[in-house]
Image (cartoon, rainbow, N blue to C red; front, side, top):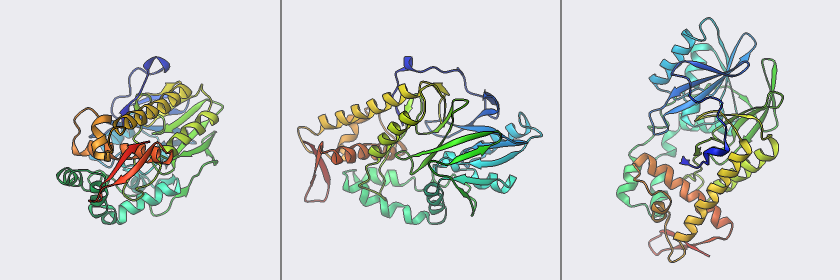
Length: 348
């Protein structure tokens, strides 16, 4: 995820997030819980919606002892004597689905989730080896990542993906256009790709609430990546189309409740900023590839000036390839493959 913000365009009603295990009421019957992550992005937001005599949770947190402990603090403190009723998971990323198995087993919670997100969670749970180094090594090498850096990136294995507790063997499918009843409210389900496969978002029109998951975040741009399974995917094009759909569908005056960062007002302004941000990224890549054809690995330092560790390199690589694939689809780059099989790109 990258910084992409003009701070003056957004309004933040809460200057500070809740402390670990504590809750902030962001709207009547809607509570905000924050759980810790062991990454540069060091938290994930969980939202609890009043659901009859208990609370439905939007997302679950990462499958770590720290996230379990924060849940325990909330459940024995602010939520003491109350219960969780169900869980709605927006997408398959471990910081959002990671404790789904644990919550299902501990509290008997049923899971609602978009089908592609659920099935990919199952794939990662039951066949992680099929999505591992043997798939990714030729993918990285083809795009010019040096062998020693490729091995560093691959050395992380499934550490990130293994920080989950699985998902229940049955679930309830949610999809774009559904109307979900949670307690006394009805929520319109929207889905969008690019960051994930078919990430779920919830819009409550009467109270002007928009649970944006990771699709629209205030201070950073959600990671939009291309992966080895779909190496030619125009993930950025999918993401930009989703942003335009949200701009047309969700009013500008909603309170945006994102998966990371602070809740904010200014949805349309933020969408415009994100679209502009990715346009500038494409411009940087076009300029870099104007005098000679470059591989994705060679483009990386033009887009990310800071030093990247192996974890960040994997994300940055996927992000640059997403922009390259989008520019290919628009005719702004052409592909040239070397005799050694390395793909390089030249501006048109």
